[in-house]
Every structure is written in C-alpha cells, then in structure tokens.
Length: 122
Image 1 (cartoon, rainbow, N blue to C red):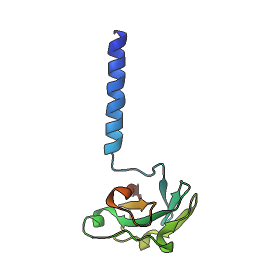
Image 2 (image 1 turned 60 degrees about the horizontal axis):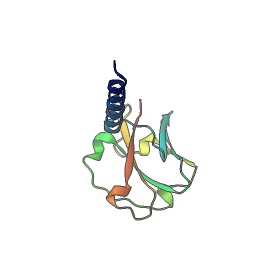
Image 3 (image 1 turned 45 degrees about the vertical axis):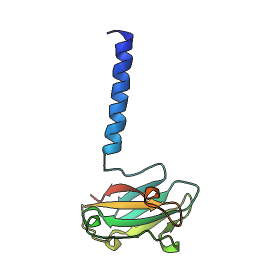
C-alpha cells in the first residue's frame, strides 16, 4: 500500500472514531464532571477549578418533564469536590435504568452552556 493511501485511511479512521464517540449517548464522564453509581448512591465529581451546578433525572422520565436550570447551594458542587446523592431521590429513578446528569458552570446558563452525561445504574 502506498504511503499516501495509508495516511488517507488513517485520517478516515480517526474521523470516524471521533464521529462515533460523539454520537455515543452513554458517557460516564467528561472533562468537567464524572458520575459513578455504587450501593444505591450517585457520586458526582466536579473535575474543574470552578463550581458546577447539576440536575439529575432518570433518562426515560427526562422526555416527559419541563425543567429550568437553578443555580444555588443545594445543587452546587465546588471545584475539585464530590457530591453524593441517594438514587431514590433522583426523579423517576428505577433500578437498572440510566440517569442523566445535566450540568453547567455559570449561574444563569443559556441552553448552550448546559451539558450532560448519561450514567448506567446497573
């Protein structure tokens, strides 16, 4: 195989990998936040040097609710800190279902500032 063909194939595979990764709805962490489930508890870790705010909901229930981001001490995770929640306190939670952690790092976020990760509870 010619070197130029190898380079083209390498670029193609890298691009496909990036596209495939970004379309994957099941992410447990991002560069900013991480979610872990253990013993009916959800631990949310803030991995950045500024506060993050969050809203957690069961994935299938998320399509049936309207919510607005609220930024207060109750849903604030300080920089480089963790917050632990009881899974039974998550709206719509059912054992084995996925939950969505919506998060943002500004007090009054616009829609583009709100990101999310999906966490398995199995």
